[in-house]
Length: 218
Image 1 (cartoon, rainbow, N blue to C red):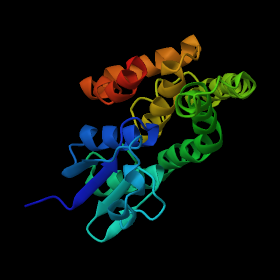
Image 2 (cartoon, rainbow, N blue to C red; image 1 turned 30 degrees about the horizontal axis):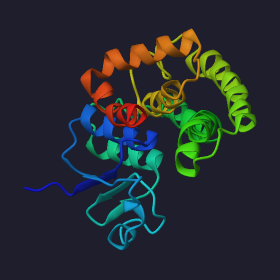
Image 3 (tube, one colour; image 1 turned 45 degrees about the vertical axis):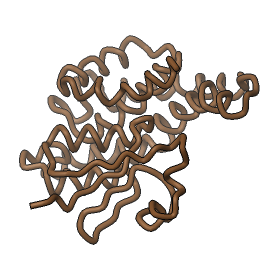
């Protein structure tokens, strides 16, 4: 029987990597549709019928369409994770996952993506010099984000909720990897956290980073 779960992704994108990692980690029965951002495929008429916002990731499961990565991960984990650990059933643990996912939009994601975009993507697209004042501002904010992440969200734990991975860690790892790949000097504490996530995830972790690393080598 064909899967009703379809994910539309480009693994250059951090949120797409989060969704892809979750699907692979839980062996969800999904079909993957690569939607090339640099070719503008997310703006193609056929894609806009799925996501009128013209962005990835987009997840379609039967008649249900989800066009935000954190909502998509919550949905996929709730429906397809038989272990109940990725989006924990225990409300007291689940709320800590939600707390990080809500916080990261204006913190890890905003400044990690902002650093990478302004240092790497914008100069590639515009053929103009890097705007270092903008890059430096994101770099300054990333230092604050790292400190808050380590001291508050990890608080000496291996993962955000304690001793096991959740969708919060998938989002965090994807967002921290992006500025690291772009040349940002992550703190040792965050580097160690990423190594722990990678060790737990196995080969899928590096596999989903291949596209972004290849783009920078091209």
